[in-house]
Image (cartoon, rainbow, N blue to C red; front, side, top):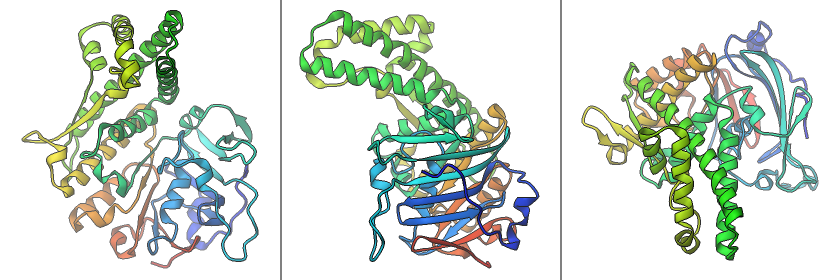
Length: 400
């Protein structure tokens, strides 16, 4: 696995890198055996990065590589082994797993991150920060928040609540790095309890211990989500510009308990509800109550129309509005906004909203990566962005 970003050739347009980045972001990026990239190294400026090229060239693959600088399974939620580059034509048989390495400029200073699939560990992911191996992916969140929008998320408001929970948890994680550990602990206890109930293991003490973990971690997860949603709702209400001021709320049983009682009382209520539901949960699988059942509800002012009933264009605008508000919120709470990965976002906006979006992104003081098939879509960024042409797993500077 790559642990250092090797030197890349710098072009004259990259002189601003040497002067020192003003924005939080990636200054060097190296890929090895990642999707359709055999090997690629980039030196980057501190402004927006625009990736253009034909469909299937590898633009989204670059965004996915960047998404692995955060905890989780990346923006495609893929199995790690699925990311390994497959031999093409006369290429030698690949024996190593994929790797991503980056130099970051964070508010705390320069940071080096290397991550990838350990070929000896199957689906195990290894991570190194400044040359030191770290055991927990949560350490990545301490360095940089990363949020993304992809075309697959266009159905976020019309599909089931699971996608909205994942979206919300990514927003929470960018603000609260400890959130991933709490979610992981809750989900592990949830799976273990479901297995015991499914297998008919009638050990009240064992089940009670798991339910106590679920209650404690579940209330903590819910509290973090509620806090982020409340702050984000306020940030959206204060937003200016052509994007709608989304209203957000979080619905669920645990959310209701936290509104009505102290957290410790809510934990006891949650544990009791789980104990009472063991028989039914054994039949249905999982658990009928908990933060895994919560839903993020978004409405469109001024009439309060549910986002799922808004037009496709307004749904996209709502998503952008939420992400921009979140970026401002993270800057206020953590001192720096997140790295934004915006896949094929410009094509869905009219010229006015595109221009406003680019203007808002330039104000965020963090790097934004955007993809599209046509350079002309990004003309307002001509003097501020680094334009890269992507074709068949190779990247070249453009003269746009």
